Length: 382
Image (cartoon, rainbow, N blue to C red):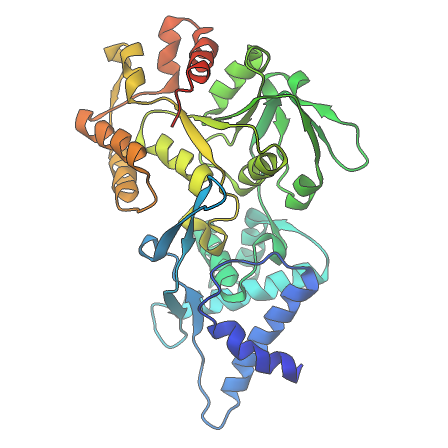
């Protein structure tokens, strides 16, 4: 254990480490023990002090974009800037204690060989430490603090995603020791994506599809699945029902590795939120901290885009909302946005308008499949 403590000096100060490792339970337990021993070591030294917790800065100003050399995938990652959690600063004292509380809980979870969702962890902490945890947001941020401190993924900490995504279309998914599920026969409900990343990693996947279509909205996904668009256009349909959760991104990334020849095309609303959703699938999310880049995929923007506005009646266009303007400001400030995406965002700001996918129903409820097919045939995606 002494050797482990000595080696931890480099472990906690190595500014070249900018990613979260996927570790086995005993490896995470060892890192937690190192953190505790380092803390006690400083506290019991001849010049005792409460040591700060060095964490990678998770602000967008600390983000960089990596351009793939041998791949089309680009992704966002965090650079070398650090921030701290300190017991000695009044405004950070509770956040400092919350880190240790979450590490303690994760250690117990790993010892018991259990996995919990972030929601389950929140209620456990709310009951055990009500003076320090009063909201889910506090728990979520503290989990990211622990990820940044220990340099390991949330899943490695015993925290699993809350799956809400769905899959439909021309793909067979088989869980270990189970019969294969034909996602083309799941109806408009689709196949529910599990939050257990280990299970998703073990899925056996087979497909004869030629495209993967990522759909922003659940209702649009249901319409496409109900109309069996995946038979007209040999495809796999996937939705996260809005902003992508980790499990949906994980499965899409697995598909992109298993079927690298399949283009991944996104169908989102023409507004800043739609572009933000697309960007999260494509580049990752700084909000994920050291896990930001891990599930980035080479997603192309199928629609809606500015050149589709001619298909939409003027009364169906709506003014941008204050929330749209906030998201647009965030996107503009990021170096991650490629030029043609930035031009689309500028057009949204110039017109002050937004368009939803459902506006295409003006041409009939079966028009959406025709719209997608025409775009794909013309390779009209960016």
